[in-house]
Image (cartoon, rainbow, N blue to C red; front, side, top):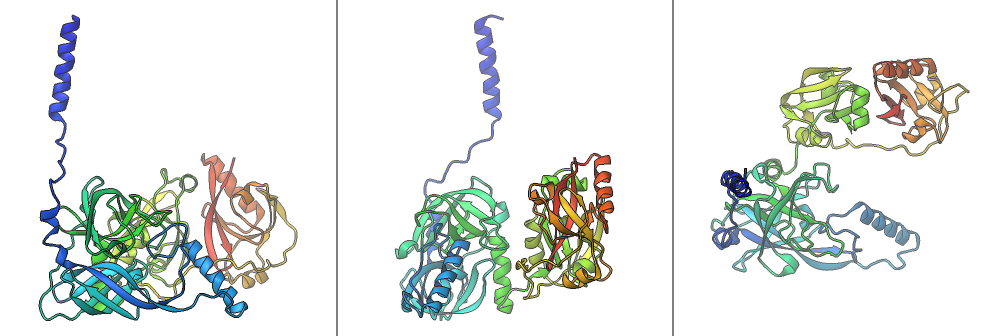
Length: 482
């Protein structure tokens, strides 16, 4: 084939490829037709409260305190108490501004919980400069959402929620709010990412957007191009406090669920399984013969809780909950929390190399449920023993069971001493830990531990799953077997 013929053939092929490529959606010429009818429903929220001089965090989450900020504030409180308030910031009355939006013509307004904080007075300011006092219907710290109510003589303009699950990365979105107290402002951008976890709450599932969001935008709506609310603007990532194109919004499906309960009960009734869970790493998946890392590993089960009643045990990996795949551990708490207590749901889990199924009746999350950490108390004295993986192990005595609040029937070996450079220490095992199981086999001697490790090697595993009891918690670690 000549050069000219080859060129024609190549161009014909490219023309076919171009002809079959999907058409790119053109951006709208103007967002005005979308936004104009919605602006009366977007409000400014003014709060008055007594506060101390704030200490700015390294990363600004628009008033959501980060771990470093909380630690610094705790230190300052302790300092002031110890030294008689020397240098303590004075309490003063200040007014702060945020955003919100009307979801019902009767006067229900959604905003962020951190916008209202500990406000003594909340005023909702509409686009026409009308000021109405608001009362708190309910608030939820875990999702940073709040529902307010204003009294009105005539129906208000309200917005509708859209389906946030339908918002795709690359879709146009529009943020409306009250940045820096400037009044109703509009910015546009795209959905940058979905399912973001920024560690500000246990149910993080943020929509990330590059639509400009600044201080004062908190609580405002994130609209799609159909004029539906797909998120509530809640946080920004910024070392300077200003917009750098990384903003986060609570997805509308979560907002609808929370707001519905706040409106009905004034509080949130979350579902509860009664388990402690861990993420499944590649090593954990290998030790369990699970293949790829997925699901949520059950490290402990609450006695007589919903999971225990359904037959779930430590070492099980929950793969599906109520028809939804658990592709990563953090999804399970959110799915369970969204389930109404008393609902019976199917659960698929992995146990000792097999998929199994059960049905679980979801309970109501007790307010007292929270994880506890080891407090550094001295470990019980134990006699000398044999070694494996750099650990010196001895059988679990009656006295040690009582000291660690373990059931009388529990088996295990206690780590009497550990080589800091050994394989076990590198995996986080400490002196005083109790090894309850290895690869889901109860162990009560060093020989039993060695046998379980040998069994893992025999079937081609690189890692073994070890269940540890430490103070009032139980969890899993992996150790190499080769």
